[in-house]
Image (cartoon, rainbow, N blue to C red; front, side):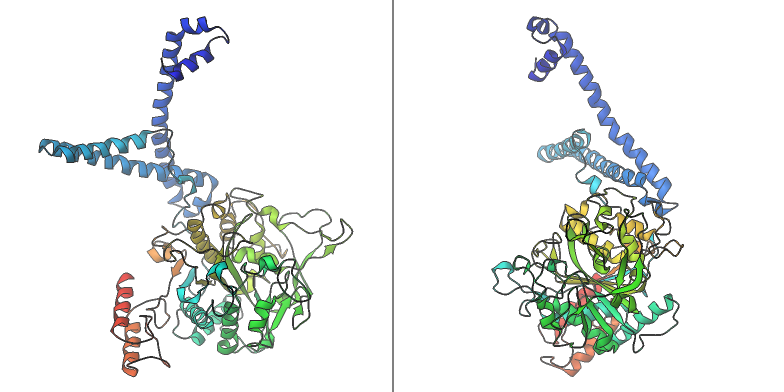
Length: 612
């Protein structure tokens, strides 16, 4: 009698009566083994039956109407259905191995036959083991099932630029901080932003690209086929959240936050250079900052000398900074706030702007899962303090209550949708950008190198741009989901993206109306997940739907149209004819050595064929 059976029989008998246990051992143990065998057998059948039902249910419901994939029942069914498909594939592999083993035995190839037979039995054992759960099956996001309506001059397009030459920082072993020009190359960053803007618009020059972006945006807003006109203002919301508890006299961060990332000064300078030198905006018509934080010295001291007339916003004025002011534009939440909550308002500079640029950072978040363009808008409001309670205490609607840490699951009200949909914030957002030169595992963590391809132990050295606020956050979510397996996989981390994409009919049933116009918000953009972390393709890349298009204009995309083809070959040929050695004034070829030669043609050919 086994130890397990003996313990089971002792539990079945009367406590302290060993003789009773001994007398009943045979009957009790046989009964226990029978029950365990029956339960074990049913567990083996349970998974295939439930998997088959889930697959049929998912296909019947989702194929006629893909938006149903966001329903809670379908999010439960999909992992079971996908695991069932994998189970079928494994079963087919087992049968194939068994047939091979039989053929090898017929031809007296005993070693090969034994190996194939062992593989066949091993696969069957893994498939039928009821204690084994499909690894990570419940975590798999639904691939290539777009929700919502894509936005932008190129609908749903997100441009990702990666250039490892942008960063060269030795972490905390370095004597200088990450934002020093010696470790974040301003020239490389300027080229990255230029390529990103051209790739987003699908144009060959920065000027044509910006004009196309402005004209499309103004047409959508009913202003006609016009570009940016003199005197129009733009507000840029950056992320300086690590400037909390900063010194409002010296405008310096706390020493422990010195190397924790905020928006990089090189990225800010590159964007301002585009607006001033390419678009032709007057510096005094540009406001930039994070209304709830200071404008720190590490940004101001590097950017202000280049653009002295720009308005640098800070929660406290002085030393060249402009203190944010209240406007008369209110902000309302789509769910009732606590009694006595004071009214939120937009900053004056944001309300007066004709255009808004949402400039976020690539980070995870311990309460929100991720923090990119959606979460970046948390700092876009000015809030009244209530000093009558507990000294200096703020009496306002707590935006963090709707984050997945505090309200887990799908189909819930999310404050981020109100922020993305307010007509004076998300409603006039011309451009969304994500500074991914460095990345944070949490909102307050140190910069962390990335291990997934193509980073492979280096800093991300990336920038993302889009005119679709939902699409760009969806792409960043997928990157962080595969790089960091904890916070982005928080239950409900991507719920705000589903709610925003389906704001006209959200799964939560919320009537999203942050301006109290009486009209429900429309879809704020398109949401989906890529096919897999290796290919990183969305439905527009695959030609299977009107969802996201992720483009990655590489070094071989010489004209910036997000494609590598004959136009790039012609550009390279013309440049080769003009220069035979170092290309100081012209184009530096894609080979990366500062020369235009045969190596560049080889690189271009590689990227050309890889894209087909």
